[in-house]
Length: 404
Length: 167
Image (cartoon, rainbow over all chains, first blue to last red):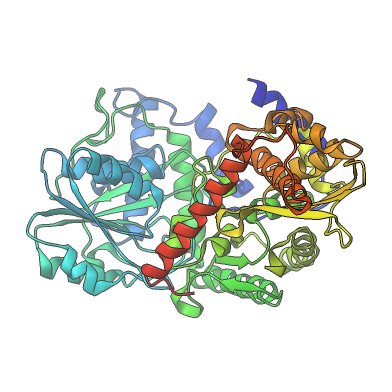
């Protein structure tokens, strides 16, 4: 509780800022009012029943949830609402995919070295329990090594779990080739993809990719936090990982959070309503931010450029500039970003993604991750660029590393 | 990416924004560094020492987080006007207390600052060619920790070279 008081004092000391631009969309997002408005009635007056029960509020809840599931399933090219399981977040969706697939089957699990911790940590847990885990390397831009993947998948492999778009450096993986490579090596392997950073940003279709399981995130498309989904292709076996009275979803016990699911649906609708327009808007802001920041000397872009990069992702290393110090400095200007520096983490290890692409530790410590959305304007980006230069200069001026 | 809400004290943020005695000292009597960029934190410590072995001025440079900057800044203030023997006795916990406490994962920032200071003091006497009685022969906890961090960074860079990591 002493921490609570410290943090309260910090907030007081920080004070109000004139202008705020939130670019830390990787870690949480503010809820757009148009999404909130859609959700509000479901908290108080609409479909608030338990969807398994036999009264009007229950039926309405059932109808609302299945309608949302059907809507989202259609957006990703699935066949029916039953294929979608809502969970309480990304970590839970990925854990359900991983723990739910391996069940009693023992064998090899294959992931990429640059996958999100939502994949790497559950897999690490299984490794400690005796599963064999292979982490396929990525190249300097974060693309998975397909040859190494082909070699990694053997007859004992039960699961391949990997991300479609890298959440830190925006690498759009060759996901069709990944699936093809895995199927050729062993057609019985269950293939899971985390599409949290792909959904709403790149076009894909689950049937066309031929993927078995696919995770979707709500907050990453500006929907509410606390809800995500796992697509499970009909016929693919997954076990529940949480036990309790089963409701409308075979894989998730509990009372569905209807308002959050409604928000997830609304955010999806808004992301897909003018998909191409949204994407080109994000890409324009991304390139403006990237160009401006790379004009600062001693900077490195992490991840690929152009069409191979997610339209919203910017990740830049500022050499001789420790990342945590920079995030705090920028916060006083109302610019909110995150860093892959070891200092921002309890484990004191820099971003595993940046070390997987071969970045030296110092470059990882100076990395800043930002994401843009359709809710940002070019004025926002202009303001961010104005704040960055003096912030980087002040932090660098304190450092002795430039002389060594 | 897992993040932690770092419960920095207000004092740490104040010193981060307005550090005292910041910058390289051109006419320093002695200087020392601790840590390495690969570990994400490094401190350079500069001392001006008079003929009575009193620290008349101290300054620092830091590559590191807010806690790193704040503890180094605080230590420069703490040692000013002190005899080397008194300055030597300052431990990392004293620095941590002065900045209003450090979050557990940031203890090493205080350790590193004290490590750099003690290295500078050792260097001063090495040049003088004698070792005062109050100075232990063996490295203290803070000095050992600084060394350990630097060794770790060497291992890290070797591993990266062996792994064929490209820039």
